[in-house]
Image: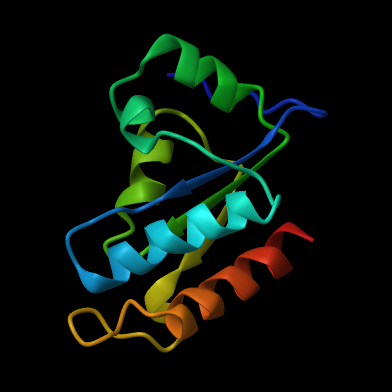
Length: 122
């Protein structure tokens, strides 16, 4: 499959792991806060996985993409790559000192991920 092209001037999209683990929940909450704060638009990862045409088109038109994974399985990253997207910034929650299965899903944990996401998108 040829790589979908990411366009200049398109939206900034944020995709998050929303897995069952605590770090997946933190990734999801951080993406929602980043969107609320105006850093970008949270977008549908499962739509990319399902190759839903309008979602694929919007993703291809994005000027920037931030992918937030909860843990080292990197499911969100793998989903985008399987769909042919290679140009994106990747943030892993467990790289920020949170541990899968042992991390609170509180404002402090979410804030740590949000701050790193803001830095990456700046």
